Image (cartoon, rainbow, N blue to C red; front, side, top):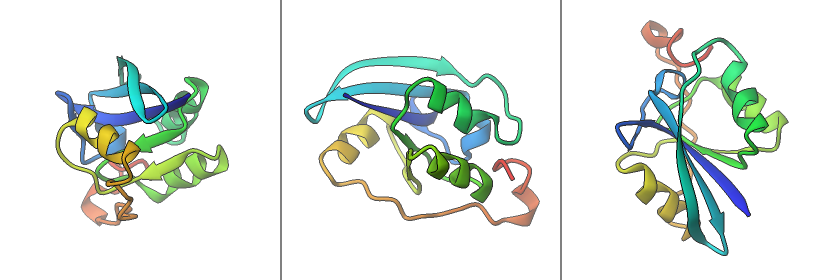
Length: 119
């Protein structure tokens, strides 16, 4: 089983990982989604969310953008980070499972947003 979380706003992929409204968490088996749940964002503090999602058993995180600090923590937990995604959260997971969604590796570097992206 693979657990894939998507940083989401109204079931759409969020551009800012740390400030999403919720995480849509999809349990997948043999390349198909078998279960999904919406987990409210418990609050943004540096370093908290990657560990929170690790505790939920997440294997992969999909987001529009994310700060480098969060990426490093996910990497330390061996959680795959897919950035640059857009559109419907469930579709993003289906694209990921079928090999159509690959990370653009976009890390937030905009100075005016550095607090928003989990730096």
